[in-house]
Length: 131
Ligand code: HEC
Image: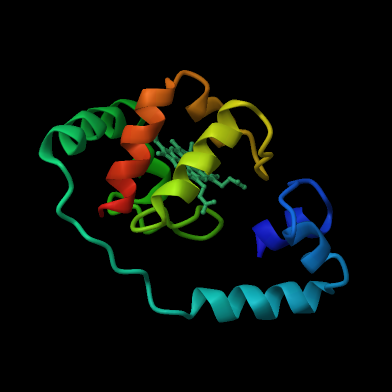
């Protein structure tokens, strides 16, 4: 719901979602958010390349991703699920936070992503997509 709100208010620019959300009421945002949240959690191929998985695990511990996103990365409240999301989407999201082209509803992810190198972002996205 928060993400739809950011699209509607053009606080997060991601066409075509800004146009799609433009005419939605607060009730619409709630209904769509509830509907999507009730879908079954995605399944993923958990057999990631061991070397990449291990590298990413070190980054996850260092940056404490689980302290906000839950230890199993399932998220809670306004903190999104990041496990088993599409790898390309995760890369785009992390790069967007790092370059400040993707605004969050709070600055947490922008701060988390600043010190990450491009290679670390690829490893983290790979790891999350293989949970
Ligand atoms: C201090 C809390 C905090 C920490 C630590 C944190 N996150 Fe986040 N994360 C958030 C919040 C809050 C959002 C939602 C921000 C928004 O509105 O876009 C988010 C969003 C994301 C998203 C976007 C998900 C989506 O569906 O659009 C990704 C990917 C992500 N985080 C990955 C990570 C990774 C990887 C780490 C560790 C390197 C991490 N986060 C550490 C709080 C945190």
